Image 1 (cartoon, helix red, strand yellow):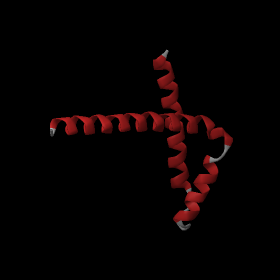
Image 2: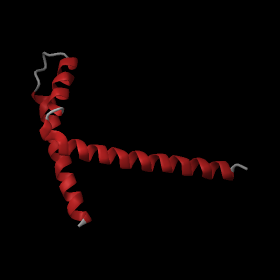
Image 3: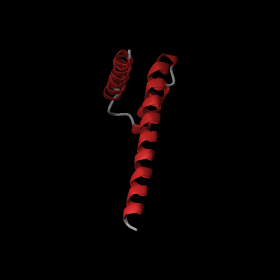
Image 4: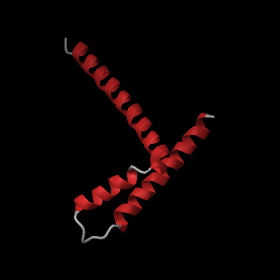
Length: 83
């Protein structure tokens, strides 16, 4: 079952990233970057992206917590070894 969940989340992420890439490349080059980002932000606020936002938030939370724990473990290890 966990593999099925990862496959589904991977498909959602791939679909979302393809949409973002398409949106960036389909915007006209004569517009400013601020307008492009505003357009992308408006696109991202749509309700059909709720699943993608959930997956990205979960990925961010997992990565952030693992990164913090790794940083604390390294700090504790090096603080202990330096004594």
